[in-house]
Length: 139
Image (tube, rainbow, N blue to C red; front, side):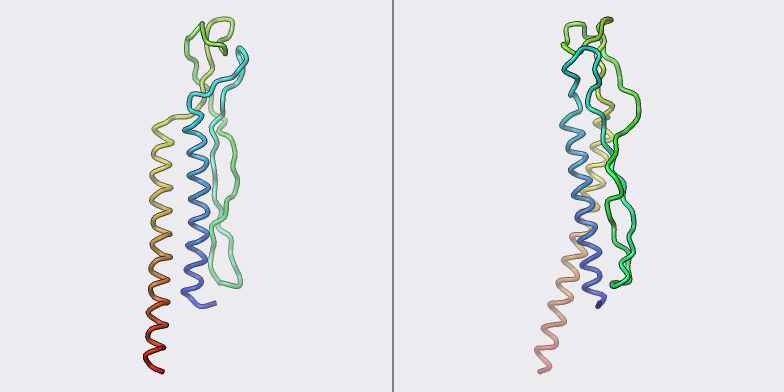
């Protein structure tokens, strides 16, 4: 496989990985205040995503793949709200373990990774186009 095609393939795998990361972050942000429907029940649990490098022997390079989408085992926070439908017998509501500030930082990082991979694809396409133009002019 030629180097430009390999670069396109690697960047495409990066786009897919960052897109999946953005989806997980979006789910976390959307459920940052989602509590249980039953008193004392568990609220939404934050999701995490991990990536692994997969060697593509045909291409001779590493691709990024989604390793796992898991849940964050950290503790829930408690808020005192005795009138809430999910409040326990003491009046406390278990809130999701989602930190909006952390999720926004993750979103920004994923967005930058996505943009970087997109730029690689744009550059590789431009180089391929320049090569084709050069070959046409020599004929």
